[in-house]
Structure formats: C-alpha cells, structure tokens
Image (cartoon, rainbow, N blue to C red; front, side, top):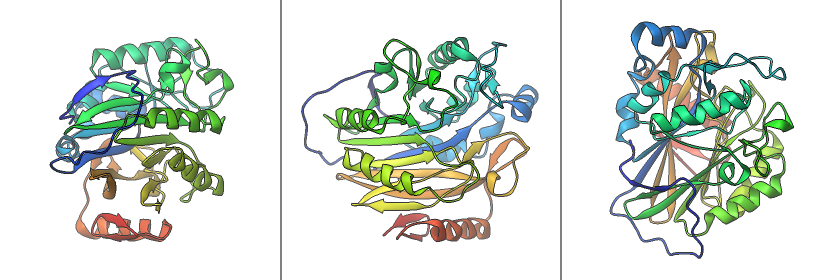
Length: 333
C-alpha cells in the first residue's frame, strides 16, 4: 500500500536532480492482467469484492506502492466496440477489492479498456477516481495519457508511465484532444515521452502492454524496444499482455520483466495461463533490484502454492531469461 505523498496526476518537473539515498529500499510491486468479468464477476457477487485477493493482500500491502494492469472496462454500458472479438466489462464495486488489496495505481494502457467505447472509458475514469485509485496509460487527451504518475516515497521522486503496443484500432490512440490510450505504435513518440518524464525524477519505471499471446518468450523487436526505452531514460521495464509468464533480462544494470502474465482472470484459464505472481522492484541508492513471488490463479482467486511449486516456477523462468540467474526469489546477472 502506498506509504507516500502523491504529487499529482500530471505533475511536470523540469531540470534534473541527484539521487539522495533513502533510508531503506523502496518496494514497488507489480501485478499483471487483472480482469473481473465472467466467473470472477459471479464470485464477487457471491463472496464480495475482497474475495479474489484474500491470499495475496498481505504481500501487496507490505509494498510502498502497488501497481496492476486493469484489463477491463469498469462500466454498465451495453454498446460494444465491434472491432473486438472479446469485450470485457466489470462492475464498479469490483474496484473496492483492488483498493482493499492494497493497489494504488492501475495501468489502462491495454487492449480492453475501450471495449465499451468512449462511454465505457469515461465510466472507468470516474469509477477509479471514486475509489481513489490512480491510473495511467490512458486519458481524456493525449497529454494526460502520455504523462507518468508521480509519487514521493521516502524523499525519492518515483514516476511510472504506461504504454500499449497491442490495440485493436487506431481509434483507440490518444491524439490531441481525443481520449484514448498511450500507444507504442509510434516508438519515437513513446521514447520522447519517456525522456520528458525522466526529467526531475529519481526513478522512472515503464509498464508496457505488448507481445504475442501464449508465447513464453518476447519477440526480437520487443528486446530491441526495451533497450531503447531504457536508453531513453527508463530505469526498469515491466511487460504484460501475452497471458503467460516470460523471462527476465538486465540491460546496463536495468531490469526488464518481459511479461508478468495474468494476475486475476476467470476460471477458463488453465496451466501456464494460470501461473502468476508478484514482481517486486526494490529501489535503493539509484539502483533497482528485481524479485518475483509465484502464485496461481484458481477458482477466481490468486492463491499461494508450496515451496516445490515456487522453486519449479523460478527455475522455469530462469530458463526463459537472458543472462540472469534466480537465487531464492531474486533475479540477478
């Protein structure tokens, strides 16, 4: 849970500052694709909005800041965007579970946030604001969508920005005064936004929706894009969208998590698509350390597993990674 002062949704700071070491590491936890439609919606109706997160809340609330990808519209609208094969919408009350679980910030840079058109998008903004959950990666105009969210934690200015490289239509792009998503189809636009947002920050983390569904490895263009984002000013990259976990990489001392998979999804997911976890980024003295705690999605909940499962998962992820070792839950070169 956020133990920091929120500086504002659209704070813009010019100039650069030196990193002043915090008294102790800052722990930021990231969760993957979170969708409360289908069987999850029915489970919440029966058991309440806290039900899906019952077993993960303790770990999330210990963090200084917690972030998830909101892979759904929050709306009662009925008109669907016809470009979509699957349209997701969740009840506004479901956000209470996300808030109570300790999540402070959600990414809206994904391929489902506009499933119910502009009405659904505006409803989602309102519901998030009503529940005091910050959002990024989408906005009522281009400037808002491409702006990072800024937090002051232990005297450190931490910014987090979000982009999507998988969208069903160009009409979803935030351009000018058109509401939409911060897309990564124009990489230079994204790189410039990263460079701009890095100004005045001690740390900038990018959460990006990208890749190929069901693939357990990133494409070559993703690895190149990740490096360019880091060279443009990002300090860490966190990915989602493939609906499965992918490996890790450390580039010039900066961590990359290519996909942290699903976090909460209906009960039709099985096997590798049900493997999930929490990614921890620990910020200290200008460096970022990465670790991962495996969980499983089962019966509309995020649940812990035994030691053997965790070891097997981390060994599997190490094999998928690029030049890193996983010792305990820590990911290092």
